[in-house]
Image (cartoon, rainbow, N blue to C red; front, side):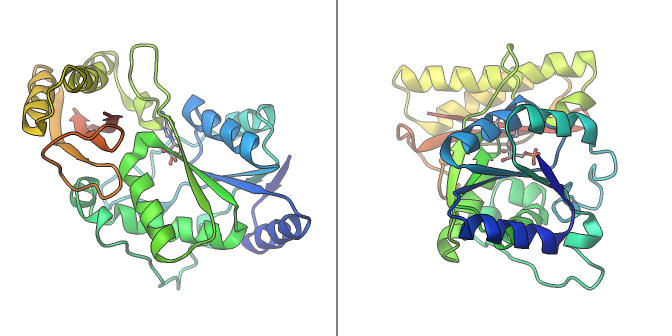
Length: 280
Ligand code: AMP
């Protein structure tokens, strides 16, 4: 396994791989790898013959009062997980290498990004699309792997790839969860024991919503009311949003369509911001 820090070297090595006829799979991450990331790496290994994992805590996707400084950085562990799971290259650039002081070109997706997390984190998706476009340009991957856990991110990236004719195929991997249902996230480790207990109500509420939908309730107002009701019973939880939306446009829908509608939740568990979703 090769570790590349230089942007120029990444571009050269990726070009050589491509000219060598290899199919390249890209897994962009911010490190602190867990089983959610590993499942994407495994899917990348199945689809492609060279897997590139990027580990880059992207400052541009954090708001001014968010957790960029505290975000867990676990380089040695990440290195081992990548090695154990057949990663060919880790791209691990510095902030300075990706965003030099005079950096001034950003990409804004204006529709899918404008709702939900786009409202509560107004600069977030601009940071995500900008860094992903840079990674796509550097690596030119045949396939790029993202997690359903970040459903809006998947939709924004897919839209940007379509709008801008970026030659990569976006693959979405299912959400990997703890045994009690909590979606794996690097931010889970900020939770105290009591906060962690309350956090399980997120997936429970989403599962209940799916149960209602499966039992024939197609009215999304009814579904949203149930999710809000269940989350409201936990005293550490403050709801940021509960939405039932189309999984491609992220626009609210009134009735559920199988495999096309998702329920999305963002909450504060005291001072820890968590998101999750379920596909109906
Ligand atoms: P992050 O390092 O949090 O930016 O995540 C990197 C990639 O892993 C993103 O595409 C995420 O959607 C994905 N991911 C994060 N958590 C999970 C999870 N629990 N299950 C599946 N994929 C995940």
